[in-house]
Length: 214
Image (cartoon, rainbow, N blue to C red; front, side):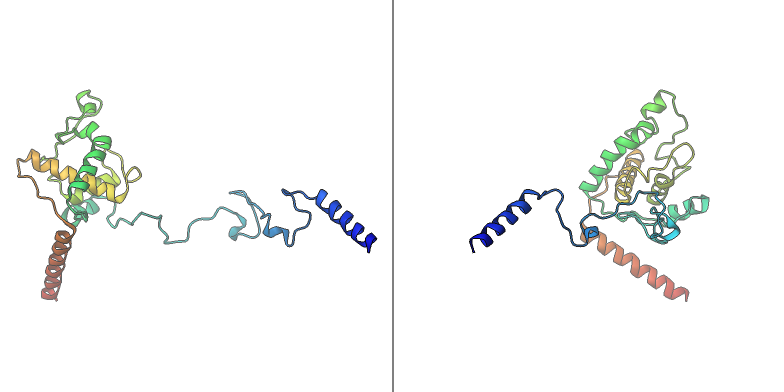
């Protein structure tokens, strides 16, 4: 009995002295502990086309991004100008954020008042920037968004710098500047309830128009 206890003690001592917390002596299915890492562009039979980096599934979209249905051409611009409306509520919060983003991205060319007299224009670094109240262009919520999304002439796209919501917030502020240049009264702020009611009225009107046409 004495020798058995001594043997067990020595065996336990020898096993514990060889243990390494960072590298266990024995592992059951070691692949579950130490997974095989693949390089981004590594060739591997396990993947389709034998390459780790694969294209997204067809039809998938990035989180927080929504497809834009209007094409980048004159026809798409005209359609957006005629029918595209700002989906955001005209609230103090959205307008304030729109002003902040406008001063970052737009004012340097279009001017803080939207009169086309930004700093770059005054320094003659860029010419031909129209005022928002230009009657020849007669901008709308839809045309402003379309131009910010795709860009036009020397103005590049801002779809990569701002989210869809931020573009619409800037859109609200641009239309506010246009109204001020035209001497129109200040637009009253809306609530979510006001926006939903307006959308319901417009939907009903569209349904009646379709029914009449049929």
